[in-house]
Image 1 (cartoon, rainbow, N blue to C red):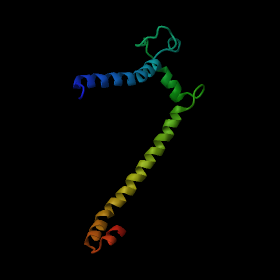
Image 2 (image 1 turned 90 degrees about the horizontal axis):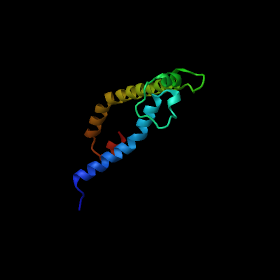
Image 3 (image 1 turned 90 degrees about the vertical axis):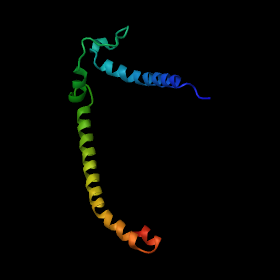
Image 4 (image 1 turned 180 degrees about the vertical axis):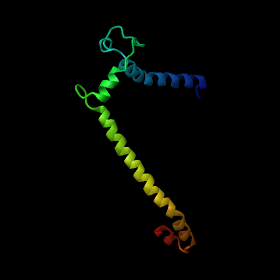
Length: 115
């Protein structure tokens, strides 16, 4: 016997909230001032909110690793890989219909696998 649909929906919503809670906490903490990060009791809505930590992590090289440079390197490598794959796929796709047609006209199935 299956549980009612409402129970399954409530269970899934509860699991989703439980799964998203750490992500929301990290986002909220990143917007807090440095002095307010370890403040008790914790506040869920930081005031005043600041983006200073993002600037420090992405563009500063004094205290943190150069994450901005790592993002740039990853972007260059991934875009290069995408361009290479799309180019070689386009070359293959241009020739593929002729190969498929030629294979269909041969008489034996073993010759189809070879082409």
